[in-house]
Image 1 (cartoon, rainbow, N blue to C red):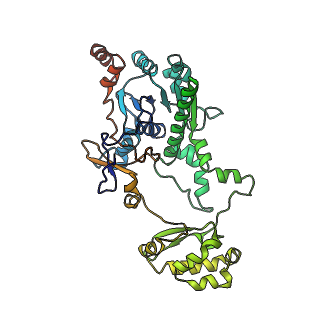
Image 2 (cartoon, rainbow, N blue to C red):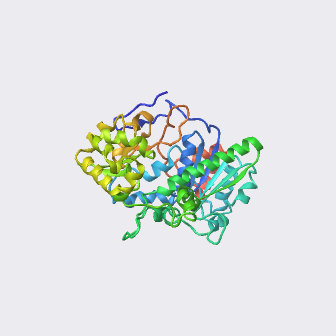
Image 3 (tube, rainbow, N blue to C red):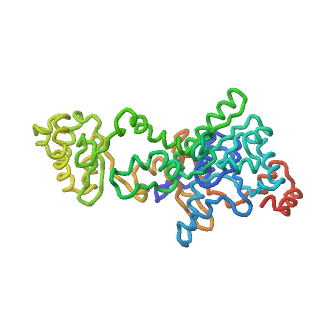
Length: 420
């Protein structure tokens, strides 16, 4: 049952060793592009659902071209597609043709879930709105991913996570320091990845209703609302506290032991003592500064607040005299919560990653092995095993035959350009 741990810190994916089957028997029809909704499809596929990804037979998912630009011509796997489309099957169908649309209806009639992030005008033009699909399956869980939401004056406008989630949703504004020369920008697919978890949760709720009430659901998830949920403490506080939850320069943090500190080798860590009086003696002991505990300026939380700049200066001086490795050794058994700041590269070597299977290695074929991030939700004490993402239209014949089409019909549709 245990997944094989690899030297990279990842588990080698092999579907024969362990299979997460909580969604076994569930069929998902995915008509979506880029990361937001397709990543939700990957989550469902990780849990055992049969996720059928519909791609245009010529253009495919538009995200397939993004990695080419990011790699700047270097050879390598399409890491964006691999991470957000693993464990799926791909069929190439031109929904814009009458024959292609009929195939979508035929497949939807036998599927449990329909996923899309196509814009309203595209859904209307292609005739894949909820009412269109519902005519062929009134029990289906129909899920739409939006930029700004299903209602309101901007309901028909598109939105990527950088626009609808990061900028419009208040995340970037909450993180960017006041007076900065430019906004702090998000990393790739940051809001999309969070939104994908919300989409997957919506699917699970819809499937639960279907199981309980034998009826379908129309589910909507937007990047804007997902951002607002993520920023909820600040947004709620913004109308209560003038300007919202205050932020402070690290040199004058109200609680000196809920603050970031730089080590001798230029690394950073954070102390997060939300009960400062409880943890102050231990912090002084681990820093080998027992005199600070007895210093009248720092004897309790109020005094440390009143003299916070001096206290932070003392802590900064001491912490700057040793490397992160040395402090890690000193803090290894410390009760006070703390954490070292890692980079995406150093996360690979975190001691918790390999034992929990948080990274897994898949064989992408032509481009060899690629390490992917596992689904953050685990069942039965094991990560869901991963297999590579499909090539564009790789499973067209296989899937359509499962839906009752014979080879003569497939050849006819290929000639007409309806399928790949």
